[in-house]
Length: 133
Image (cartoon, rainbow, N blue to C red):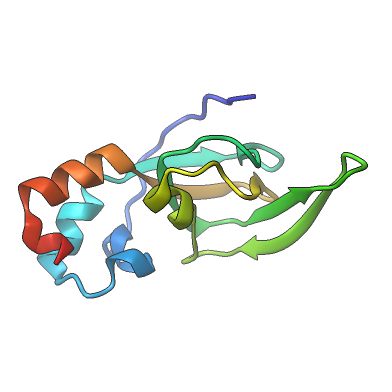
């Protein structure tokens, strides 16, 4: 099930992209360009960011709150495999490969994130190849 989630501004002193290992090595101006593509997202406790097996084309960075990454079991129960804390990112593998999500991601508390669309980041890299190099 896909959940429509509200957007609110996320004002941070550091560019959001600076928190993502994928963007390590970019200078401050490049980080600002990538961060300008970030879309803020708010989840309430219990809201699903995505379910295991969902197709997702977004990379997410947690600003506050926490996400539980889960795997389903044969009995239908979810098992938490990792907690995603502020400063952590989720979805890099799926973002890069286009594969379905390996884990579900659910907010365990009110959580603020910024999300990056694969299509927008790819367009930026095509327009400014120095950012990806």
